Length: 314
View 1 (tube, helix red, strand yellow):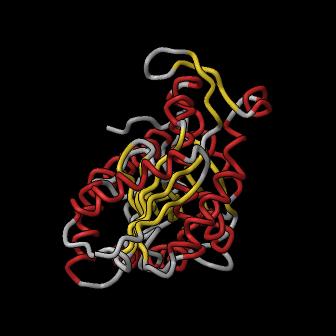
View 2 (view 1 turned 30 degrees about the vertical axis):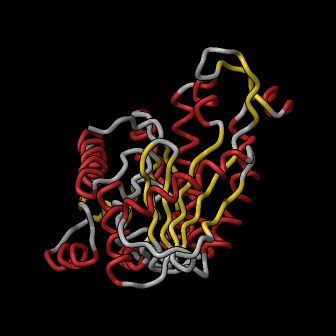
């Protein structure tokens, strides 16, 4: 079952304003966050900017039709599994085959009932998460896919770098503000890692969500510095927005630590441990995880956003 829809973002791409508003009213009433786009080009731009959890995509639109948008989505490794429901006035057999070949998740014929729309949206999100073994909050690949990707890279013998991402002082933030706001931080961090990787990495890079506030990125050895630097910049530039005014101004929060003692905790930072096969010979995933775990401790000790690289020659 879907953990919570309060943090699920739906993008409606349709040139009919009345339909946009109708769908927005229906989904917003159920707790979804809804954003809209009037045409295919605007829709594609918002997919990259907003990282929606599901896209409702009209078949026939000016500038770019729905199939062109879908084709662009499926060509991007970071969007290939993004769930998409196609909206159409009519759905011929040829249209359906075309959509299925491009990787559509479902079709809905206009007009549709409110209850059917809600059922289809919830079902597609849940089904996609289950089929991918994805994290239900971020829809990023989960541990099965992460391990498979790492073993695949090792078996090919190609050089790669693994980035293990964690947050400083996330637990204290959760204790202070609650899990709902903590989930927003997790989704925000996922979006940052996707953006930093897309802007500075390769088309074949991999992003996964281990769980909680832990993520991984697998990239090439020449790309990880820029990805890390961009992720740190994006995180530090935006994290204050999630704090209340007083905490943001004073630069810390006051809450209990793990031993129950009241302490001051600085604002969150992002800690990145980098293990590169350029410096270290990796023979199995467990070895990689062990090195990354020790490096992560070093990164978190700095108590600010930072990345640490394993440079031991083996």
